[in-house]
Image: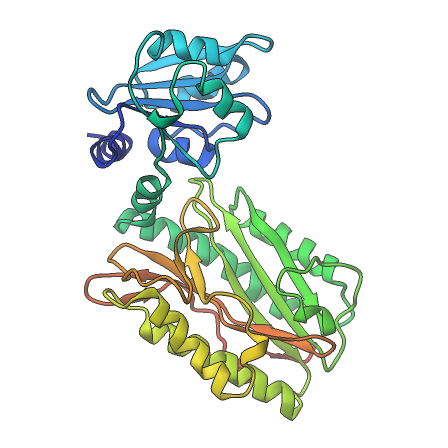
Length: 368
């Protein structure tokens, strides 16, 4: 059985509906091996949970991609101007009273109203939890693919460190990293790159601009890749330009200690809120609790932000196969910010850190 058929089978057995209708492109890729960006057109994977028969509904202009990659039984193309829901209902819904599962967090209102032409509202259910749970558990092959993504990312960052950053703008550094990532085989960047210097580094999700890197700055770099096999990476390192001040050193060391505490806590069986707390307590005890404004981490795989969520409210335990980030930060408006992010694979016998790029303070001081 192929990995895609195995995933379909696991989903079919884990939901209590007659039919599954998936429309999120990465989810469809996860269950079929076929990635299409449909834009405004309808892309859908239909799964009969009893027979596990699969049908892909897709824009006709993407026929070649479907032919080459989709591991599905039935192909259902639709042309521009054609009603795709009419085709969908003709295929599996006319006159029936069965239940259907959709991605409640993705399925838009207009399409939901279309479903009401054939389904009663009480027979439409969200299956997000089941899909997210499947995608949240990775195997050894996933682990190897994710390691490749991280290795590409770290190789580009090593090149930047060697090339130097002083006098370069945030945008120039982002462009440098993007070029290096693609030269090392990345299909694309997974986001950004987010490059922020000086006071801008206090913006957890800022945008790189024309600010130049100067001695005395923090330089926060958060970035990642999409590989040819569509796995993503996500890592952050914060550099200090020139000799750190006492305050810079104190903030950096607090974030590094929090990062290490989170990693130590992130083992199979640990409730996720306890991982968040382990890191957060370090920053609170250092006097910077008000400046750590986000969760400790999130899942990673084919998507940049997958389940699970390592936040203060999530009491679910980490499980073998989870891939999560640990990324504490301190952000002081008008001064600057530090974030250090690693990605981990939770194993049965221990936790694997994908990241090897140095993060001790003496290793991240840049003098050029």
